[in-house]
Image (cartoon, rainbow, N blue to C red):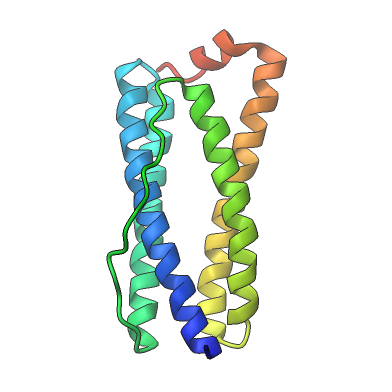
Length: 153
């Protein structure tokens, strides 16, 4: 498989996985809103829209490279009623995703346009990972109940 084919396959994997993550974040947003955690709901609603933007960029890049875009199969993902459990889950998704993304970036380093797009996505995911870690540290400092209360408007 050529580097171009590997890049297209990697972009397609991002499209498939990130579309599901965006849907998952939108669902979680509604759950959090129903629990009165409006600030957390807003954060995840915005995050879902941001992810959809990266999906569109990856689709466009696949097309630019002459690839065929697919609406790939997606495996079930958990839905959490406990915000803390979701933050833990989402943190692990970010860690795993960044490790995988680093590999596709290595392949794409000779394709500057794709590399720059992936670098922006990497930075965004890294920021999400740091946020999740910070939330877990904050819970240790202020307690779970105070943490939940910080997301009520």
